[in-house]
Image 1 (cartoon, rainbow over the protein chains, first blue to last red):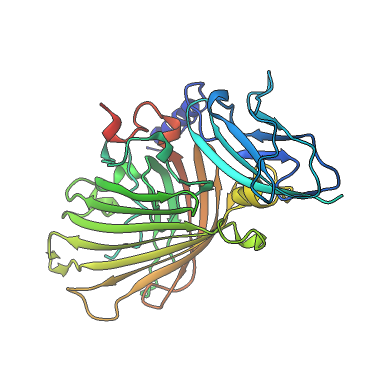
Image 2 (image 1 turned 180 degrees about the horizontal axis):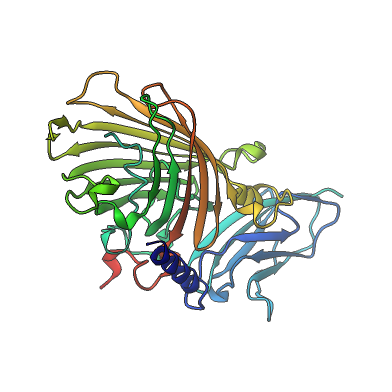
Length: 121
Length: 278
């Protein structure tokens, strides 16, 4: 029985590692970091995820404390970095900004999240 | 014998999961908005999911008569259990979920040697979950907290077995959890990286109270603090088992569980809800 169980587990793990199976994309880290305070306005927000993303269905917006968008529009997935998404920013003053992201991993699992960063000149 | 693991133990699997859910992959297991809820070990999860525990190993605390039980539980060896579940709601912005279920543990379908019953039990349940990510952002380190819980009844279809009554039970349990993944993704990057940014420490409590065919004051329950590591395709959890009262036992036990997310492993086959198979 132990051998049967081990065979099943190994089989499941092997299938899990195959190109046919993916999973939800978790945010691994960001720049500026989640919840951070930075001394200068960043020109771009970059998010790194744990899974490759589907560009057509992945978006990022950045808003100021008044709820106005301060990003430059469409988020981009850099060539060769399918798990990374970037969005350019307008010149920003001091204050707190909200980053909202909604991404879809390449197997169509969606995830979303928000975080803030603060500019303290 | 009363079982504290009625819900969590038989997260069967494969053809046994009769899942009724709305047809949308966006409702895949464990998510409400930006909140990920892991599969808890002791209490049931508030979301429709295709998952399997393989195996779950536990050392129960010594019983009042000083006997102690070691379990190696494999979903496939216990009684066949079907779960009809309906996701009542998923409120993403408020990280809230509600689920109604009717679980059936079928008699004569498992090995009696591992405790499978010779009678069928019907168990209607209500499960819920709530993450606290929507509280004011100024309460930074409270936002990763979440609570899940379940309320349910067990109605055996056979009043006695070999002269021993099979009571109707009221079961209730809660899981309080702190999500490091949520802390890192949506609150504050405190510098945790894999594997520590995937840890979710829970404290679970669960009680079962007979409501008929049993003497009064027969409530039993456990308190189970532990740790869960949640990956993309599976999770590993370990919890201490502490009896909540003397009737449950004394001393300490423990449980370890390896748990697979079938809907992520097999999104196009057995990981899909039955309602999407055709």
